[in-house]
Image 1: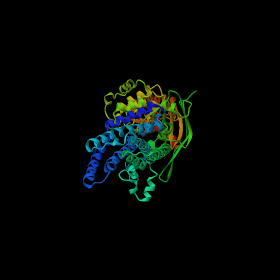
Image 2: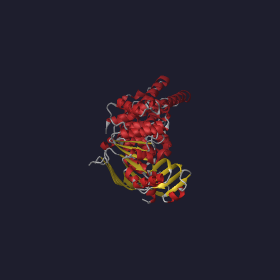
Image 3: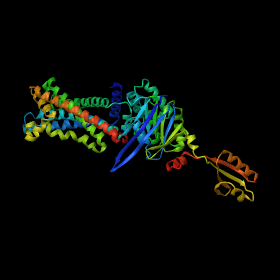
Length: 259
Length: 301
C-alpha cells in the first residue's frame, strides 16, 4: 500500500467535494434540515405529549443514524462519481490497488461525516439543549463500531456497483434504510415483533443504539460494545471481501471498460 | 533483446445476450523499444478489447502479457499509461486538478512543472481552469493525451486517441506522438493516420491478427500500381495505341493504366510521348493500406 496513491484519491475527492454542490449538500444541508425537524418533533413530544426520554430516542438516535448513513453512503457515492464521469477505466489503469481505494474512501467518509456530525451536534446543543456528550467520552466508544459497520456496508454497496453497474445505483441510497427498522435507532428494540428482534441481534446497529442510550443515562454496557465491535469487524471483513471479488469480476466481465 | 511488450495467445470472449462473442482469438505480437506499433482494423475487429486487456482493465480468458520482461505488477503499471477516446477524466473537476491527481498517483516530484509543460505542448494552457465537463470532445482528447504522458511512460497505449479532433489539431497531435521518445501502441480505424505514424502495423479482423509488417512492406504486397495520365491533346490514332496498354479506366482526356512494375512506367510514358500524346499531368497511385486491408480481410493476399 502506497500513501501517495491514497493521497491522490483523497485529493480527487477533495476537488470533487469542493466543486460539486451535491456533495456540499450531503454534508451540511440534509443533516441540518434533519436535526431541525427532529428537534421540533422532540420538543412537541416532550412538552405536549409528555413522552419520557424522547430526546435521546429521537434527537440522539437521529444524530447517530445520520453519522452511520453519511459514512456508508459516502463510500458508494464517491465510487459512483467515477462511474458518472466515465472515469473508472482511467482510475484502474493506474497502479492504484483496491486496498488503497478502500482506505481513501474510509478517510473521506470519516472527514465528511465528522463535519456533518459537528454541525448537527452544535445545532442540537444550541437549539434544543441536547448535549450529545452527556454520557461522557466513554459513550463515544459506540461510534467506533458504527464507523466500522458503515464502511463495511459502503464497501458492499460499492462492490454491487462494480458487479452490476449503474443500474443498481438506487441501492446506494436505499440500503441503509433497509436496516433502519432493525437498528432500533428511535425506539427500544423490544418494540419490534419477536422475529425482528431476533433478526436485529445480527446487526451491530442495535447494540450501538441500545448501548449509546444506556451510557447517555449514566450506565455502560461492555457486552453491547463488544457485540457491536465484533459484528462490525465481521461485516467489514465480509464487505471488503465482496468488494475485492466484485472488482475482480468487473475486470473479467469488462464492466470497467464501459465507464 | 528486451521487448517492452510481448503478447502471447491472448483470447477473450464475452456474452452478448445469449450469444458468445469471440472478441479476441489467439492474438500474439511483440513490440520493439521505441517503435510506434499500430493495431489496425475495422470497428469490432478486437483492437479496443486487446488494448483493454493490455492495460489491465479487462482480464483475458487465456494468454500472457509481458511488459519489459515482467508480468503485470505495480512496477509495470507505473511505467505504462493510456489515452482513449472512450473514457474521460473526472468531469466535475478542472483540467489542472485532474492532472494533479494523476501526477500524485504516479508520485511525480515536480508535478506543477510537468503539468505546465504538457499543457503548453498540447496548446491547452488556457483550459487549465475549465471543468472537464465543459470541454469539447477535441479538447477532452488533448487533455487525455496530457494525462497519458504525466508519468513519462515507457509504454503508452493510444486507443483512437485522435478521435474527435479537427484535421489541423489531429495533424499536430500526430506530430507530437511521433516526437515522443517512447514505445507507443496506437489503434485507429483511420488508415492514413496509421500509415503516417507507425513503424509496424498489425491488421486485425474478427479478433485475429492477419498480418504484421511495416506499412511500406505491406503496401508492397500489391505489386500493381496504377498510373493516371491526363492529356493536353491526343493523336488521331489514340484508341489504337491505348489498346496495346493495360487501360483499366478512361474518361475525357484521362486514362488509368495498370502497372506491373517500375520499368513498366518508363515504357508506357515513352510510348505515349513518341506516339504523339501531349501529357498535361501524370500521377502514380500506390495502393493504400485501406485497399490492402480489404484484400487481406477477404483472403485475397
